[in-house]
Image (tube, rainbow, N blue to C red; front, side, top):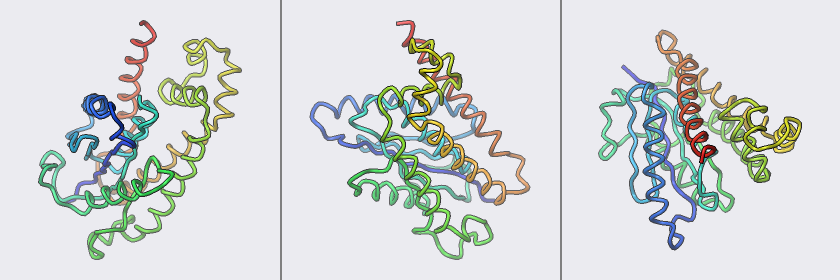
Length: 265
C-alpha cells in the first residue's frame, strides 16, 4: 500500500563564513527540535541534521514539508545566512517510521536533493523549489493525478513560489516582521500592541509589504497539494486539510510561546 509523503532538504546560504559555522550548527539543532515539537501529533516523521548545514525531513502528507519550510523561513534567525529548501512530494510503499534516512535510496529523495542543488546554482536563490519530474520511472503510479502531469505541476508551483519570493525580497524589515507576526498571530491589533504601533500603521505595513499576496501564495500552494492528495487517495480516512490545520496550529502555539518569552524578557 502506498503512503503519501513530502520531503525537504534544507541547506544554508553562506554557511562557510568565518565564525558562523558553529553558530549555524547549534541553530540547526534547535530547528530540528522545533520541527520535532511541531509534528508530535502528526504521526511518525523522520528528520536529521547532517553534513554541517543540512537538514533532511520526511513526513506524511503532500503539504507537510512545504508548510514547515515556510514557517521556518519566516522565523529564521540569521538573515545573512538564509535557508533554502529543495522539495518533493509523492508516494512510498512503506510507512514513514520504517524509513532509515542514512540508508534510504528513493527517487523522491533524489528529487528533493536535485531541487536543492538547482537552487544552490542560482545567483538569486529561491527559498523553495519543487522537483517532481526527475528520477521517477515513467510507469510508476501513472494513475495518480500528479504523476500524469508532473512537469506541468512542477512548473506552475515553482512559478507561484518565484512570484512569492519577489514580494518577500521587496519587504522592508518592519514589513517582514508584520507579515511574520500575522502568519503566527493572525490578529493585527495584537501585532500593533507588540510593536507599539497603531492598527492603521500595522495595516499599512501589511499592505505595502504585499503580505496578503505572500500568505495567499502559501495558502494556494498548500491547497493544490491537498487537492492532489485527495484525488490520489479518495478512500483515505486521513483528510489532508484537517491534518495540515492541526500542524499549523501546533506550529503557531509553539512560536507564540517563544514570542511571549521574548516579550517578557
